[in-house]
Image 1 (tube, helix red, strand yellow):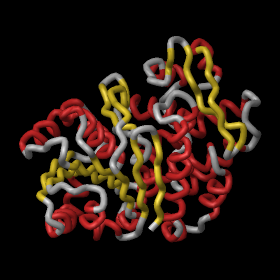
Image 2 (cartoon, helix red, strand yellow):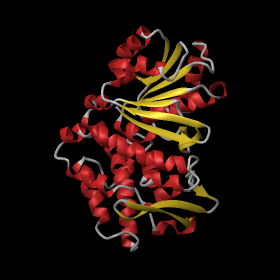
Image 3 (cartoon, one colour):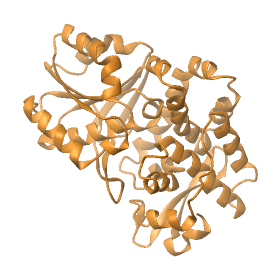
Image 4 (cartoon, helix red, strand yellow):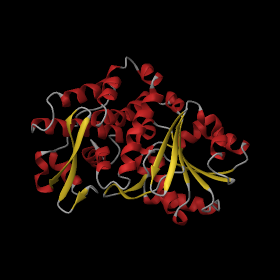
Length: 353
């Protein structure tokens, strides 16, 4: 088992990374929670595969278990689904002394975490991420949110879990497309912060090789994020660097109504797009965009998008939450492993997009 301690004002918790830990989750929960009632939020695919195992394990540990199941996909991160979760929490008589478990990928973690942060003004929750994207990124740092029709993650809060339990074994049952989707966020960490990680990912010979090293990779990404979050919990400065590729990526997701490109695919395209532009401007070391393109191709991720113009993206970005008055913060690379935050006048954004 690998442990990472997250220390922020008023809240300390651990990220535990261990192959097979799902099989002893009830025992692990007893170390952080002394109550008897649990409420699981998951999606239909995961409920079908792991629901019985999870229920049996928790009930055999003496817990009373309730569950709310959502449809998979970004469209579930909505006010409509949030209201259904609230109704389920009321039905199961969940109180502030109980524990919510988000068992799923980024959508489940964001939606379930936001429900936990707002129901009864805050119920403790545990993150159990099941996708690579969630294990390396979205389950860590306390950002929870839902989408509105006008944009992604526009309603949210900072609400940290009591712990994060990561079982890398769960990734072995993922279809290849979902594993590769999570690689976009993993590549992001190498691109903006850790050239050694970037090169390691590029040099793996196969998905099997990747999965044989995945526990260490997850640890590296989570520890990078932990370090940044501890210094900038509320995303007012340095933490924005974690959004490399995301401003354009979110725009791509939204433009196609969250149906054509996944979050990872949007981020993949966003990383190449912004780096190609900044390289043309002489900001980024030449060859950096091509390195990103090559590693995206290696993991079967897109690097370009048809039928989308800079103006389309700029229109969506104008509603981005990273925009402040008439300025917006963009994350650019000096070189692979070396990113910085550049605040620009929004009137000049076309130069970078």
